[in-house]
Length: 100
Image (tube, rainbow, N blue to C red; front, side, top):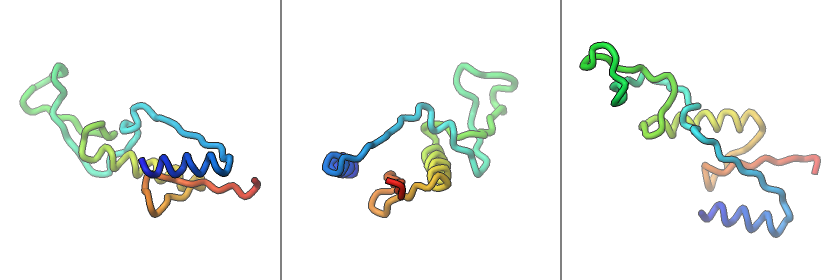
């Protein structure tokens, strides 16, 4: 929360424009880089219930890899767009425009 307070205070002092976004189902956008298998979800049993498993292509919310994969994907996209991750808070990215 200290990062949010600091950014809001700076924006108010310097009359900056801020944008934020909330991405629903963000974890589903993370690509898996290692094979991860899971049992079929409850209520979705097909075939031999004891031996059938699912290979995940995308990360799932609640999985150990989900948050990491989503953060990795987001970091790659933001970096390509010209944003820079701050050293003090890995969740804060800054975009500097020279034309202003």
